[in-house]
Length: 313
Image 1 (cartoon, one colour):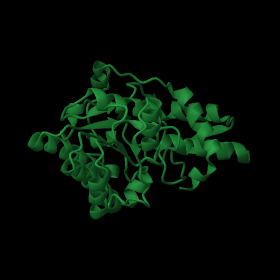
Image 2: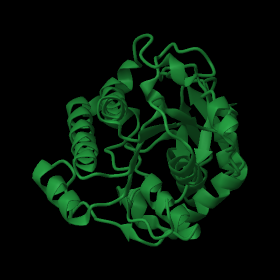
Image 3: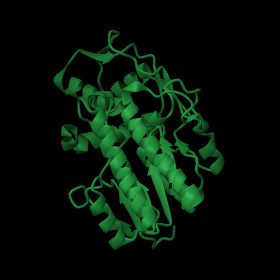
Image 4: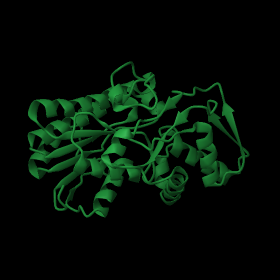
């Protein structure tokens, strides 16, 4: 990308999209095309086609998506599949039809099989069945990834994809039911501290292992890949490090300043025992993460305190 290249960031108000915008501007890319959902509904094909025909962006970061945690995924399976599949197909197709030089599709590590080898390499995609709790979302993301690959093969496009691990950071969603584990813990411990609660109860037994990547590090990788990677296979985005949910919970409590007791409700499900990405591909390309977890949680907690309205989403 040249510094004056016309770049469209889809989903620029979300956690990932806003981080990509910050990173692009930090690196001197200022010819950005941005549209809110009210200005451009990506699930409406006619609107998307008209937008691309008029703006003709040279580069596209497709970070728009309908996202949520386990509860949201399980309660709205059809919505998660339809909304994600329709919006990504609309954007990818319109980008191809209007001569976009390069598109980068943002997926999720949930595309990999439930019992994938650990750490999970890019090559394990579609080798066995998916985790049922987020199967609808995963199928939509796999479809977007594959459509990029098929356009490359059939029409010679340069469309790539990146699959992030669990993300957190500025502009996250702290909703009590529809957020992911780390922002949910930030909110829970903050409210427990404010309300003087002596005990906080968490789901499961704390044994599952998870990996977390600060969203600004992902954005840095996204811009890096746009400039330095072409290929049909996706690229994993993570730290290559993992910790137990119990250790994560204690770390969040420490950062937030909650000093009460943490109990575990073992009648609740643990979820997948381990989810760690193999990040050797990104490493070989010359990229590594920068933000350590405790530092990132401090930044995320500060964002939570500064933006209380985000807790209502």
